[in-house]
Image (cartoon, rainbow, N blue to C red; front, side, top):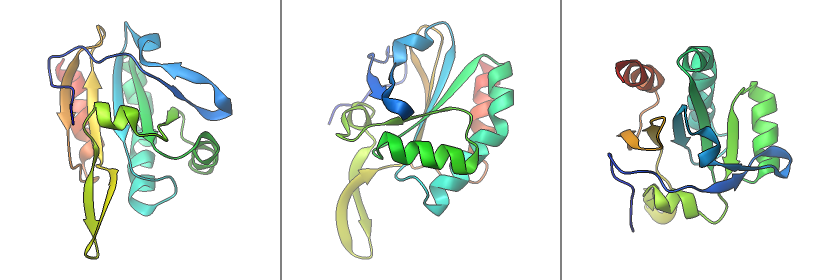
Amino acid sequence: MSSIEVGQIVPDFTLQAGGGKGVSLKQFRGRKVVIYFYPKDMTPTCTEESCHFRDYNDQFRQLNVEVIGISPDDPKSHEKFAAKHELPFLLLSDPDHAVCEQFGVWTLKKMYGKEYMGVERSTFLIDEEGRLVKEWRKVKVKGHVEQVLEAVKAL
């Protein structure tokens, strides 16, 4: 499994947002981008993480940062999730895991003794030129968004 490394330009990708709208990474050139990968809409930890990004979204915007969430859920699920929790940023659908694999977050997971493939909660910070400048893997939600915001401020 190949994975983008810090310092590399992130290859462009296009995924669907709500309403079937295609969104490409290249649309955000000239802005910093925070991409957070999460396993599933409406689950407790994913909801907590998304709501933390929501609560800090104005601070990210003031720093010219676009926050984007990506999971394998379909666009309709994302629309419901965003509406229910008033998420003001894009949620993109990666049903075939292509972008998850590109970032190396589609991994073997274990729960209750069973193994399965799924999204490893991870966040990536991309600069204005499209270069990966920082990554957080196996994210624990508590305090994470604050760490990301501090990293953005340090750039």
